Length: 138
Image (cartoon, rainbow, N blue to C red):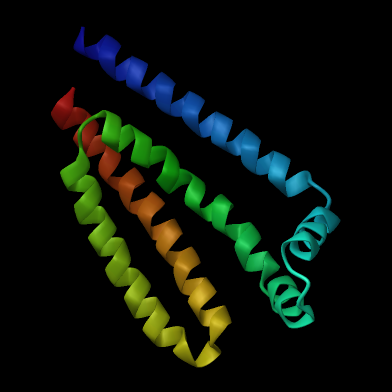
């Protein structure tokens, strides 16, 4: 029974990751002009449009780098591993603060990179912790 439970867990994780990748690919293949059009719908300010377009690549990278973390959030919550999720979030937050501090001279670009590093760190830390929690719980 335990082996079947672990196999089910792996199948659910694989399905969740696969569906996340499908959504990411759909976003990535959408025409770049759709983002520009969306910015134009959201604001009429020329300055806001200019800055939004300048940092659009960072915003586009956020769902890609955050997909693993968001997927594993669901796994961790469903498996009642909230304590581990919190602890890993604190480690990722410390990484974010260090990155942000180091990249402060780069202004808004540095802040965006720090956020992207935070998202990637969350996913990678959860992925690294997952096998041990799986063995311990199931």
